[in-house]
Image 1 (cartoon, one colour):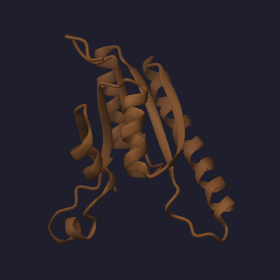
Image 2 (image 1 turned 90 degrees about the vertical axis):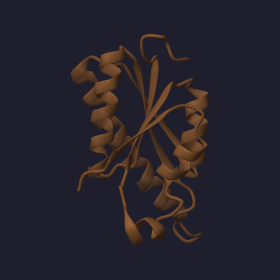
Image 3 (image 1 turned 180 degrees about the vertical axis):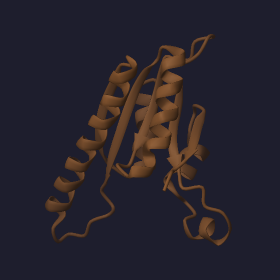
Image 4 (image 1 turned 60 degrees about the vertical axis):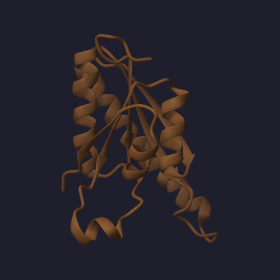
Length: 146
C-alpha cells in the first residue's frame, strides 16, 4: 500500500527486449528514491505459440525471461534495491494486472513503444495500453529505446 511519503513496492514488467531498459531505469530510480521493493516480472505469453513445438517455445521464453529478470536483479543490486523476480505464464496484460494485486504494489513502471499515427492503430490493444486502462494503481510508461 502506498505510503504518504512514497511507494512501498513497484512492479516492473519486462519483455526481455533491449528497449525495456528505459522502464527498468525509471523503476530503479523511483525504488531508490522511495526506498521501495522492486518486483520484476516476465510473462511467458501463452498465446504466441501454436500446438507444434509448444514446449520448445515455452522453454526458450522461460530461459529468456530468467536472463531478463537476472539483469533487473543486477541493476537493483548495484543500487542497493531489493528485487523480487517473478516468472509467470499467461496473457501478459492479465498477468501484469494480477501481479500488481498479488504483490500489493503501489505503482507499475513499464515500457511502451510510443507509437503514433497509423502505427498506434495497428498496435491497438497493446499490453501497456491495456494495463493503463485497467490498472487500479498508477502506471508509469517509459518509451522503449531502440
